[in-house]
Length: 406
Image (cartoon, rainbow, N blue to C red; front, side, top):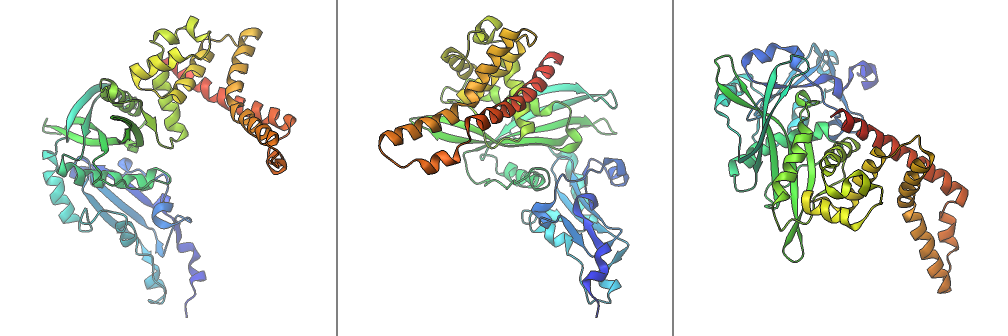
């Protein structure tokens, strides 16, 4: 009787053995340098992110670059089924991945997949083109052309395409889930690269996307919330995320029923990018000029930022703090001290609110001993506050450096 412990060397790291390719032509099938690996695999293979039962395994997930038709395939040297004479079974990798894919959107037969690749040259972007720009590729120094489009539920064929596009989030966005494409309140911003094939024909490759949920706000307004944004790995570090955010702002700018734009559970990386974009935009506003910044955070700043760029008050405050540090002379004791106190006052607001609530309860003769026990001592709070401030300033300085370099 074979024991599974005998085959521990066949437990593989899914992140290492799974590879993706965005296929533009049949020649790309043989180009190993085009492959990229997932950031994570626990949303497919569980917390261990492991695959059992193979030696020399390579899991191929191929997408046609434009329409994103999917091929799932395996290559391996040995399988535990053979090594154990059938007593132990290897994980069914294709079935496990296929469970997370929309019905009927993938192939396991390479010939069938190649038929879709033959038709991929006809792929065109969906929806309304909002922006286009060119940038230089640092590696090749070639100029690349990108376009951003807006789409919604009114394009049924787009929703099928998007169902394939969002399959990337399980591999590249932690705690991600598919959105309900049948909900009409979703809006989509998709980026494509326009390129020429060997015959000189202009084609399109899918680059990334952002989803926006348009929440209702009384009485007849909406509050768009950026839900997800993903730029596929081969296109990262090209400034595309920044262009996407700017395009979203511009799209909603002239819509009178939009109050402001928010973001759902932003990652630190996305928040830094958003802060950079917002700061760069607000630097042009009257109330964010140096002399106005030094006067402190005011309602005028909130009003102008909201009316001009649909920034919500919390984000406006963050932009104010970054730009005030931008204009602060950290070598001037008084200037620097005034800045630190201003930020710490905001960071400490929750703590003071808790103290105030406790005092109100004590006036009402309520027992607050358990609440006070949960609060840090004054000394502990001072130490905590300093740590919080140092973390904030470090993050702000990264954005300021990027603003100076831009």
